[in-house]
Length: 105
Image (cartoon, rainbow, N blue to C red; front, side, top):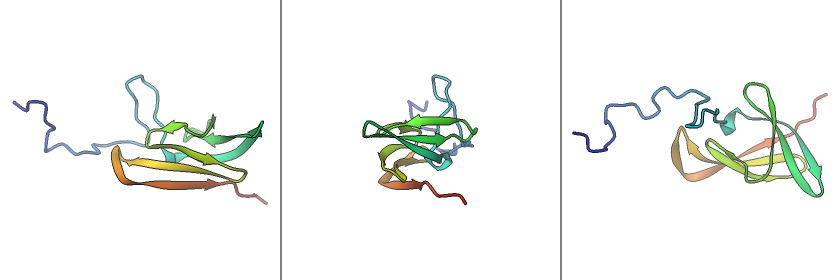
């Protein structure tokens, strides 16, 4: 009788893919998979235009949550994302990921 304990022989990441399904059936988005397309400023509020792994864009504001962290800040040229989990395991020290807009020639 396991009495609610985890199976010690089961692999913790257990074949996790880049995208997983939540209980509601929607896909989770991971910070490392995001691409920064642009930044929009309206009434002194910045909004990031982010590309998803499937190629679809989405808008995100400060505080937007992702599967492994959240959007910490936005300015004219960059977005700072705080990564709080790695493969579903909480990080002891959160790590900041900076995505910048680069000029294409």
